[in-house]
Structures are given as C-alpha cells and as structure tokens.
Image 1 (cartoon, rainbow, N blue to C red):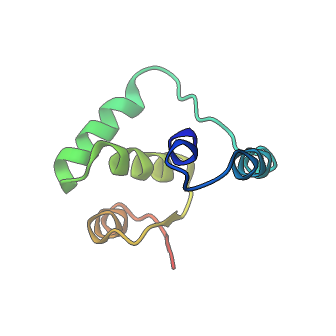
Image 2: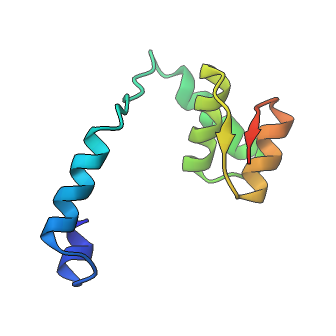
Image 3: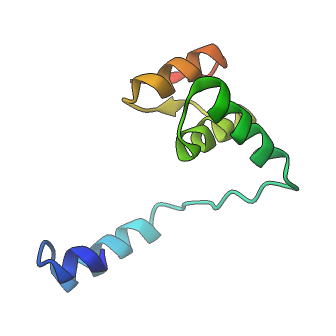
Length: 88
C-alpha cells in the first residue's frame, strides 16, 4: 500500500480505509505445527510444477479441507488431482 501511495496511485486516506476493511475480515494466521507442512508444500510444488506460494495455498486447502478459488490453470489442475474443491 505504501508503494502505491508513493507512486500516487492511492492516497493515505485510501490506505487507512483499506487497513480498516482488512482488520474487519477476521483473518486468521496459519501457524502449522513443526515442519511437516513445508515438506508437503515443497513436494506439491515439485509434483505439480507449482510456485512455492501456489503450492502453499494448495497445502493449506488440503490440510484444512478448504475449497480453493483460483484462476490459475496449473493450480486448478493440481487441486483437482488432490481432491480439493474448486470454487468458481
């Protein structure tokens, strides 16, 4: 957000408004136990040719039983193979 402020794409008021909206979402930070999810993420990335962050999304969806919303074709394919529900 600060980069966009500095580039005059948004105002400081826009940033404050966005931070306020984000704080109202009730976002939970995932803190998995041990290193197991990292090993699974690495494996998923290798098997499906995913980026590390896409593999992390897939690992979380698998582990928590969450559906996955993405337009990325490779991630959608990997999710289907892994039995993850894809949201439109």
